[in-house]
Length: 542
Image (tube, rainbow, N blue to C red; front, side, top):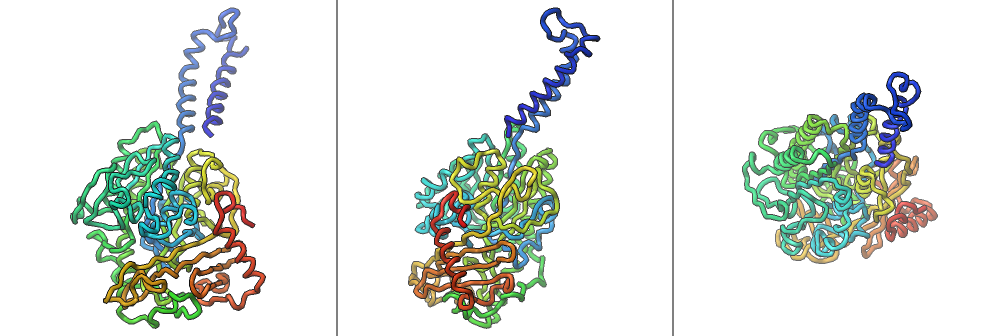
């Protein structure tokens, strides 16, 4: 990209020289005899024009900046974007909103690892949030993390900044402690462990920094914003930048800023769709919740729903202040801003009180809004996009040759800015998850424990939200009228779930026994190929 811009600059300079040094110019400005070059007066006359040309060309040749804002557990199907009016206006209405954006795995650490690498979990091998599940493990650090997309941006001379939640096990003693700063980052302000709003520890460029419970000094969402603004003020104006902000919201413990703790007092979790519906035709985990949900579960999930929205108001403020800062620095028009989440969420669907980890649309769909150069405003795009596409899209924006990197995803720059790129749309994709057990028993919840069909997560009224046999792989087809999901479980039942989301968008009926066997065979074979794909083969499966 840059060489083409340089040639245009050179061409413009030669054009000026040609016009002014031709016969017409020679009539008024004598040449030096025998040299064919313009005289001193002509050169003095040309100098301002040439300088202007070079300055303008240098400006146009500057690579675009990139900002990635990654929320934690923010759903899109259950109204998760409703409280974010500023974000929807400043990013969505100013650019593109992807209504079919998906995570390839509905859990924090493996999803974030997929975002960083552009790879499916079976390739980066982060399976769940535990260290034994490879979350921020030494194996991850030596392998996939060393080839994550910030490494390539750093090689492209991007100034890189990170603040917020990184990976759930990051900073723990068995995961390299706070001194471990992943390669590719110039400025590092990462949360140790899982999401918190107060009383947390940061790794600041590899040094431990402890925080307390003062709103003014410690509230994490605001602290991240303030440090990112300081970075923008101090950055070099001659190099592009990549800024990644990963706030804790709306993850538990759902601690809102003081000014927002009374908002949405009358709001309750939506009661439509699959809310409190029995999962009688679904896998084991969905057959065990209490149905209908007791009042204690309803009260708990409504409270969680309200508090999640309250925490997001600070994120909405963060987006507004960041956009305003970029605008005041005259960087906004040359900056791509992505807003998304690591996974979706549920509050009462199929009588599961709260969590993620399930194969259903409420857990795997995510918000995705993007604005930036070449993206027309007010676009609503329906083509499916995955979180493994973020890395190749960002690298594509920076001018990197994508054939030189090992990613399973594909750039979606062509979808939101077709004037800049040509590209294709995938007809189907993989969603995979490895269930997580609980290492010990708990008398307060007898279902918790280390067994295959024993819970890892237990919420109100001891409802199981995860287990070792909650391990599945799905092929999701979204191509015109072909809107299907086919899932296989690695459990003692070899359970299969199939949904036609055109006629059953809430996935209420498992139609595995009603589907033509040839279609089931076709989906099974496609799933087998996807589960072993790598790089190009993930994008070229028929």
